[in-house]
Length: 301
Figure 1: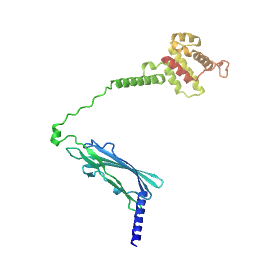
Figure 2: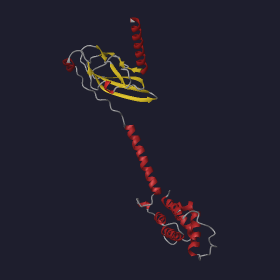
Figure 3: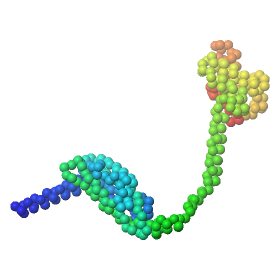
């Protein structure tokens, strides 16, 4: 009976250990890369990654408390990230410790061990994060009086030469300003600058306000004729287009359109309704587009 009892006890203990190991798996422990030359105020980071099987999960009340200080080592931050993967839960616990200790000579110190308990299952399961040793190095040998007597003035960081960056910034800023000015100059309708209010610019603004109906087309034709007359200084007729181009050579590129405009306008304004024999040619573009071309020629763009 004694042997049987011992055998059963060992069997149950082995099953408990197997169940504990199977329920919680430590995947990785990351310790600080440097274990020497640690000074007062330094912050050391370590983490543990583990995986638990359902129904087990980390007990929140078993986590170390932020602000706990042990032998000159204070836990200043703790972060927990958890992700679900089927029936398993993956945990990553990041711990940050700051060194607060006084020693006049180098001494071996250690980050404290941490215990993480599991809850949710029938067994009391936990996993441990072991201690981690490091060498603490004092800033000076001796006490506070030695430190005060050997204090050195702080050196300001050297200044960077930003002249090249300033020149680039000024260049790109000027380029943007000139580009914006060019866009406004080419496309703006309003008279924001003295040389932007030419007769064709004013005519273009008026034509844009008209709805595109047959009756308004005649009004648009009259507006353009008035603009030609104001630009030429007197009434401009079809036979005077050559003289107009000589006086204003910037309109040479749209000479064909101007000639077609006069043919169309003469037929539309002075031909009896129903007589379309004079309408042998049509205005090549809509009147609003044509007036925009004239405005661009007027501005020299």
